[in-house]
Amino acid sequence: MKIRCWLYALGCLLLVRAVAPARPTQTAHWSLPQVLQQMDRQAQTFRTLTARVERTKVTVLVNDRSTEVGQMYLRRDNRLRIDLTAPDERTVLLTGDQLYLYTPRIHQVEQYSLARHRGLVEQFLLVGFGTRARQLERAYLITLLGEQTLDDHRTVVLDLVPRDDRVRQQVAHIQLWMDESSWLPLQQKIFEAGTQDYSVIRYSALVRNAPLSDALFKPHWPRGTERIKPQG
Figure (cartoon, rainbow, N blue to C red):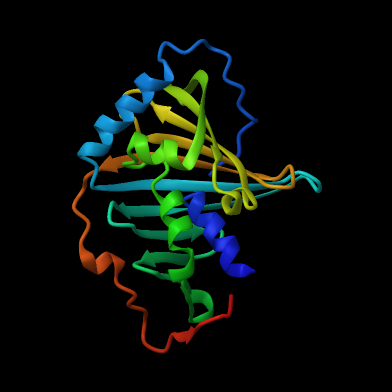
């Protein structure tokens, strides 16, 4: 169902440039409890984030890669906006229990209710962004894979396996590259369940705790926009 695809996309925090599958081999200078402690410290003061985001979906069987690029705005109160600029303009807006997909080219906005999926959305939405260690450990089995240099940033790489059976039907596991200087994600790699397909999400130009107004997350669309509510 289409709504499940978008829930998965939200789990990926929606969007990156593909890179070769990373296999961290450098011995970590951190233990897993130390990494989680650092993430806890970052989470205590996390309020908002803006970032440039790229997502590449890789379909292994046909060797296909498709990339989307955009700007992300995230607030800790589970409000998310992504303005995609390439290859096509689109806006993805999550506010409360409502998900909006606006396509200016066809003057149309699709609206989905996520009320029945709220638990899954909340589990996914803040993976690595203001997430408390206790939340992360409740939702995932966590393994420390090691350290790796990514774009001149020293990162710790974690592997997360969802504990919830419903989530594992969509996502087999997630790899998370955490910047050791900011303890924010620089990259996520999401492996789909039942296939070899995956998505790589890269975050750059991250700005933490910038003021983000309520207006940014209001579902206001240009006059003449067709509003539809697809089923499922």
